[in-house]
Image 1 (cartoon, protein in one colour):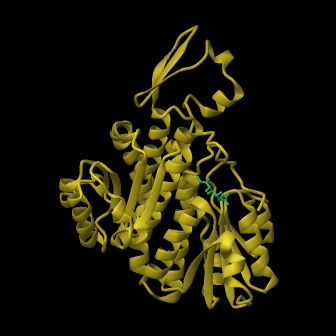
Image 2 (spheres, protein in one colour):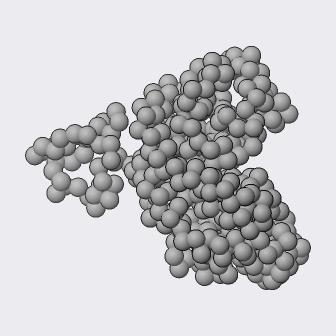
Image 3 (cartoon, rainbow, N blue to C red):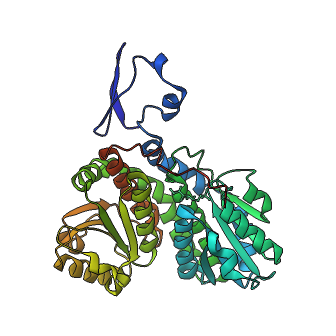
Length: 394
Ligand code: F6R
């Protein structure tokens, strides 16, 4: 934990990377919730900090569990990935990894649209991969029931043992992130992406799309991610806080990425909307000229997710173009980046990450950004209005 401070008899003051929190008279005055928060001002910040540990747990998934899940996917003709909200964004990253690493046919369908979009087209040759932190989201449960009625198999990824979705599934992979109390999903996004990455690697071995050596190399890269997340939080939290405070009163943001970073951009926009009540839209950067660019005016903040992957050069073109309209460019780049950084008004640098796993590390500053914008605007990010942790009513 990064809290520093002194506990004195009548008042405790914590400075959590610059956020000053004064709470109560003495530890005995702490409410059970404050004890649960372990000194952090909000669960959201606590859970952002817990991510390296959650990720380590998820990555220690037993290899036979991973193999059995991958076997079911591999035996199918078509995989449908279904989920809602943040889990859907993890699923979008998952599809990218399935395509790039294991060349398995998959499609994302948001769970609230799943029955309408699949109709009567499912059968026993299809597998539905349902992703849900709570395992209780009504739309995802409906999607699973719809699939089962037609004989499709269901594999789920969830954080809650014994949840409805796990009971309905033919096979469940648990993410072991520990309970998530913050209303905004943070650590569970990371562990879902990590599980999907492990599945992709297992599938790549089964399908022979990568050699054993290549898979082992990628697995080693994935195992480094908890350390990268930890370093990112340590090095960049105050940088992100300063940027967030600078832009906290902007009424609207655009998040742009390409390839797997589109999923990261979507997750960043959702976090900002739900915790800080700021309008935020995410788009694949390549789509920006097909409409979204029209909203740019001088000073409009655009957040680019810009890892040095196969899309980097095209993304630089997008940054250049949007910069020409005098937007304020905020970028998330790899340490040592020059091109995007030069074009940016503010940048956040992430230690080198394997390009195919970047959502795990590049989402960190976006979570922190949403948290600090919410904080600066005077909102409690743990209690966003109108929202509940699991949407159990359709
Ligand atoms: C966003 C958020 C929601 C959930 C969505 C699905 O921070 O928490 O968008 O991701 O309601 O919930 P689960 O994953 O429990 O099915």
